[in-house]
Image (cartoon, rainbow, N blue to C red; front, top):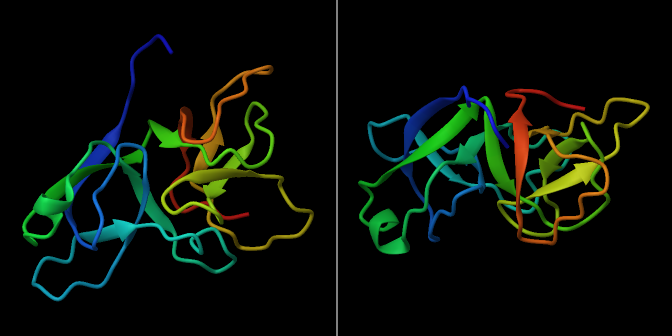
Length: 150
């Protein structure tokens, strides 16, 4: 997509037992060190009602060896536009809401806006176009909506 990108990014201490991948959804986690800026990849339950709000999207890859040192930081896009990993479930439509996937950890799924609030955390909205049909695992462009719920 052409044009200038305006982003808000911040480095967070990477925790957990898996590598971080560009486009993965991340959530805050309680840490055992004095650094309060700790994250972990969103699990498949992250899109459920009342689940923790996603902090943002990984802006880079980080291998497991570095994560296991307990000293590796990863850039996270918090606001603006970011590429996220599509789980392939549902049908994308321009402006549809994207929530953490219920089937693949760290990816996003499309959700129809419910008639009553379910308090599911929203990652953002899809900045695609009619007729696009990305496959599961493809990177899709998302306008992040920090703190939003539907």
